Image (cartoon, rainbow, N blue to C red; front, side, top):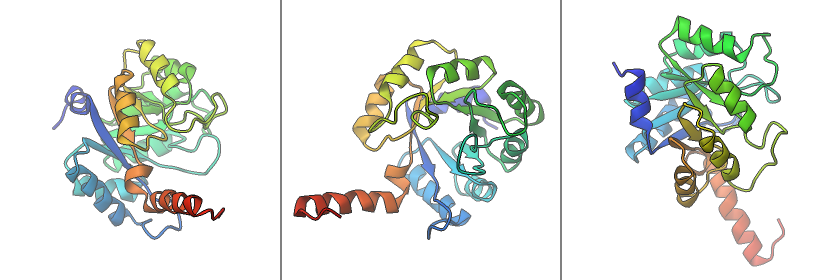
Length: 234
């Protein structure tokens, strides 16, 4: 069994691929997402990130790399693994790492982030990744006991503008803060060059999702480029 230190070491300087589909999409099926995740591992992903309890279970059976799991409940505010109940369910589904909202916003169950992380650590062997939106979030999440800190929510909580591409300024600021926790760059990383730039900013690992595993978005990018080239405003 991989120890926490071995798991973190396996991610150093590597790519994590997020395989998620939105409700109502043709690929929104746990087995399909597990197959997409397995394909990403074939391409070199050191770990995968998936959403939903069934997706976690299927993916655990499909890959041999660490699985970062989350449970989205809702669409606004704190909805990424928002409560201790969600976090423990993700761990029980088999996730090696539980990804949860790591912002300083109030959580739906009234628990603090520190209390939520403590419950995961007390009741499961899973690590915790705090999805943050600012430097202050990252500092607070590290102090609360998160094992990893990510920039997943940069531009989505109102503290920072939504950048075109990854928020490398925030990545560099958190990297320079010496959290004592591995930093994972995530959010709007759409090209290999952006992934490399994030890594060179001092992060432990990089997550890419939409640009690899979301055909609807990728197709839309190509379609929009061709319409723009032809003068079609659509």
